[in-house]
Length: 132
Image (tube, rainbow, N blue to C red; front, side):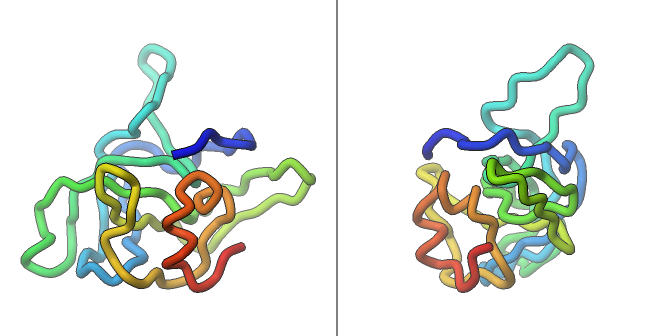
């Protein structure tokens, strides 16, 4: 996992439901915690594109349902600004299930993947079909 190059607005707070964008069998994820989050007292932790999160699977196959897993956020609705001045936002919030080393569990990713997530977790870029 590499450092973040840009300051990304954190648009997905803890306890929000996000889509699982890979072919593992999980459909909907509930964000439990943000790994590496250092915040202010009484502030709700939040995550953005490229952050690793801990989540529980709310909908999906029987194998994945009610499991606590790690994931990487690849898309967010809240717009964020890149270093070159472009502002980017996606249609939905989505994540990809990963193991402890940051390697994706699935073999395909549905939809576009943000470049910030690929810069931080380069293995996700090998599985992604479309990088924005």
